[in-house]
Length: 264
Ligand code: PGA
Image (cartoon, rainbow, N blue to C red):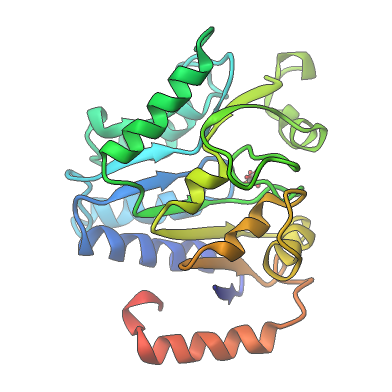
């Protein structure tokens, strides 16, 4: 595990963009796992700027998004489809037919739809690089506390904390979906590389539990301790509750010596 502590959100976004852009250039046919939420916005802006400058091409890339609210159509302004279109896909050149986002309009046979999403990831060759945010309750995707650490793409009821954190995007709480389709923790752990981004003091407790706490289904992100290639890129505020900062810095210095292309 690598823990990269940056000064602020802008630096987190730049470092993440450096890694994602490097991965796309190294493997143009990359399969990206993408996240929504406020955290990856800066990353997407950096990637868009690189694309506009002509130094980043997504024409051979494939993407799979982590999750989508159940009950929202792609044109709903709070849907993750809409978010991804506005914030990223309309401004880069990932081919439409290779963009995958769970279908929030689904009704009925959820299991076979979710199994199909898993199958599409497999058929594309598996996710090379998965970008994650983290919820205050330690969720990744919508894998709320007590999600099985082996879970796959499925329907998931949202926790009270998640509903509270996101309800301000909706006119009223009753309009906020109470369920989502999300990749599972097992799905995420199958990615070849994972980047988790976090910014702000509100994430400090979840980040500390994920990195230094026991592996537990009460904190979904703690399952990333089982992954062989996970990098946490967090700002000082999100790192506030970590106890081993000096060690993480030392590990980072050594990593820069041995695999300098991976980090700035
Ligand atoms: P945020 O959400 O990036 O909007 O803080 C992260 C998450 O809930 O996974």
